[in-house]
Amino acid sequence: MNEHQFMLEHYAGRSSRYTCPACEKPHEFSRYLDLQTGEHLGERVGRCSREAKCKYHYTPKQHFADNPGGSSFNTPFRVASVSKKPLPRLLPSVADALPWDVVERSLSRYECNGFVRGLATLFTEPLALDLARRYLIGTARGGGTVFWQVDDCRVVRTGKIIDYDASTLKRIKHRADGNEVVPQWAHTKLRRSGYQLRQCLFGQHLLATDGPRPVAIVEAEKTAVLCSIYLPGYLWLATGGCSASQFKDADVLAALRQHEVILFPDTGTTDKWEVQAKALRKAGVRVRVCRDLEAAQLNRPPNWDLADEFLAFAQTVVLTTGTVRWALTEPGGYPVFWDYLLA
Image (cartoon, rainbow, N blue to C red; front, side, top):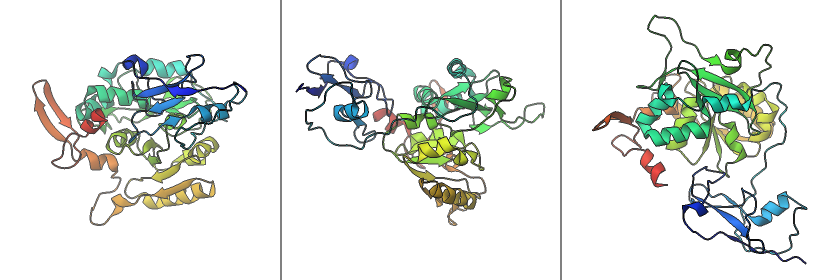
């Protein structure tokens, strides 16, 4: 019998800690070593040091169970047992897709991107850039923000292009000349004639590497990004609209069945999303609807969402480097990004 022993790599400086495949925080991930060969196991095999917030721990036992035949595996393990992360499906049944290099080329020129610049005033520039990288937020020609729809198999379905005012983080609806500004589709801008679009959720690519957190779904892409900082206990995704056509997509449903799902609709659309939730349950998704924003005592206007709720706490602060509008944890609270930076 081939006796294998494995252990987490001892700390030997920052070079011995890697980027966690779940939370994507750099220098937080310890990888397992094969003591007979001195080599690492797979890139996903290891433990994140952020035990309170991430909890990712993929053991050698789970690795060999998921990859039978690679090596003999008979040694018992005394590693803490955790739920095995589901592997992503191999092939999506999507009709058309965009090339990945289109996404990569857009992940730059953030100084022209009103949405990312607005995030920088709320959360600091490093955190804004980290959010843009994590959520695959690109910059279109002319400075529009591209919210790429990439599924959990890394297939680029499309991207939605929206113009934002960096000072308010609100969508620009009219230009200075009075002409209306409407969101556009990336596949249309790329002149993909006859493109068969099947949308996925914004942020769905994160399902392939995220841990056991429940999934929270909102309407607006902006809201998903902001909530990922305010409420990091959930993995935040967005439909891009009230109709939520993605909930009828077979691949989206297959991805959501692996998670507990909570829907956070805008005010005035909660009843519609209750109907959506009922259909999702019939499709095998564990889902519930949060109605908190509909509370009578809040008296929120129609189409109010969590982003509106949180941005109401933003406070203008004058620094020596300029004026910023930091997002606070609550009225009179502290900057919310402190929690992120100290995590």
